[in-house]
Image (cartoon, rainbow, N blue to C red; front, top):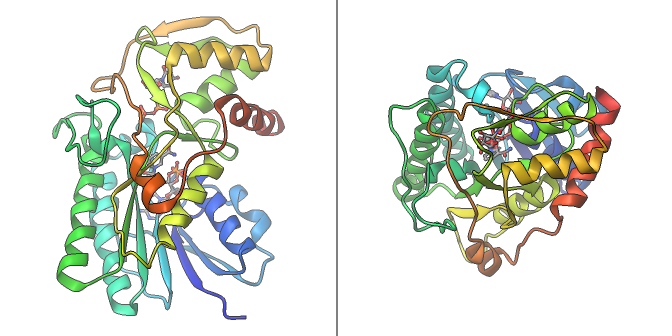
Length: 313
Ligand code: NAD
Ligand code: UDP
């Protein structure tokens, strides 16, 4: 059997560790590269005995060379508290990191997929968001290092494709949750579940009227792999990968309290600046091009995630 060699940057993070596991299960050889800024060894420790798994401590802002057939470029902190901790580093990771990984892809003729984000739409004026919408992004705000970094990365991917014929793929990922999220990651699903399990106050920012559309991690991994393997029609994206089920943050808080049988009370904290008021993917393109759509309903995914957090806190 010929195994594909696949590099996953950010492979020790939340999404990356699920992707590494799935790719190994599909008989590939997986190189997991991470600088462990937000990733954890614990996420991939169970893979270390697999002879087809290799863990590499490296920062993608420096060049990296390896023989590989495919690259999934996930390295980048994704939670607002982490990407705002060192905004210049966040921008460097998206821009210099993409240049380094695209250079590698060009050199070894690898296919390369970029984990872009619904944040490229900013605080959207179009709802739901289609890929043709250019977005409403503040270039100098708290979230800009992440949003503009990811937008610049998309530009680089498309230009390496046009100028150097690199085989690129771009997925725009909408809010994703599941087991292996870091308990102190600061994102809403992990925050609410951890607070509920500890019977602590649930911190809703603003009035909780802002909406998000939550996707279970297995659906995302399926979508990314479908996109990477979608070679015949040479579709490079960008394509939205998300679950169109839309909920207010207050609805999410109530759902988490209900599913955990928690005694927690909801409290209200100030809304962070530039926090998008609504977000919901239009996934018509993913259905048509990839024959992909999410399968896991919010309640089902939340119950699996709650079970996970019960084991670690
Ligand atoms: P995460 O923070 O758990 O994982 C990111 C990983 O990248 C971590 O392991 C981190 O240590 C690593 N990393 C960060 N900077 C690095 C660098 N310079 N060099 C090497 N490694 C580095 O986040 P996640 O939720 O798993 O997100 C993975 C990717 O998906 C990110 O690119 C993120 O922007 C994108 N994304 C995620 C979501 C989501 O809801 N989870 C939504 C949109 C986009
Ligand atoms: N949020 C909240 N309480 C929290 C964490 C987040 O009300 O403890 C809100 C946040 O203001 C945002 C939404 O939940 O409106 C999603 O936040 P997250 O950081 O998970 O993702 P993003 O804002 O990047 O979509």
